[in-house]
Length: 289
Image (cartoon, rainbow, N blue to C red; front, side):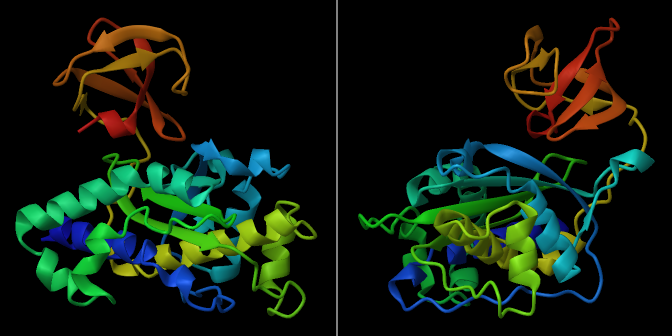
């Protein structure tokens, strides 16, 4: 039941995130607030880093500022050694680039809904109904847009828990009259005063609000374990790497079903593991069961 709830919540959010709302007049978004934190987060930069093309720095501090200002998440304190409950991957670029970056979350959510036969009942509660199934990547227009995406992953099982995206053609935020949170968020990453920076700030606010709209799903996610677990099983054929990055040198290949022993160390989406022969390396949690 919990898995169905997580899948349905994710699907609804991803579908709503791609609805053609940009065609309507855009109103300035308000940052969603929470009465209590949903847990600690660690930020991970995705492969689509549009901010570098716009002469902007990493959005890491921006996302942390949104988490603090909203009260919905607590940025993890690496010094205390406690693992984050959630890993948050941030991407940015054109609408098409962000759509591609969010493809995995979209595909998993809609496929699970269709297999379960729940698509009709879920989509009936979402504006525009079933037409949204054909709306992915469907903005099309030639005007420049700034898009951002956020994906929340559980480090416990590597599953996508929630996803959201935002698209902005012209910033509607008032960085001097929004109660201070917009200015604080933009300043955190040095985005204020830059047209692209202010548009990107707003896009991340929209994406962040979509994550919080899935509060029930986030609350049901398993808590991260502080220590090493007894065993972890490889879900798909993959490789063990020498460093916690997709570009790390290959240590050895791993077949689906291989049992590994986590050491308890985590870096972003990667965990350090050892095989039965004592060989250590790093694997992505997305490749594990």
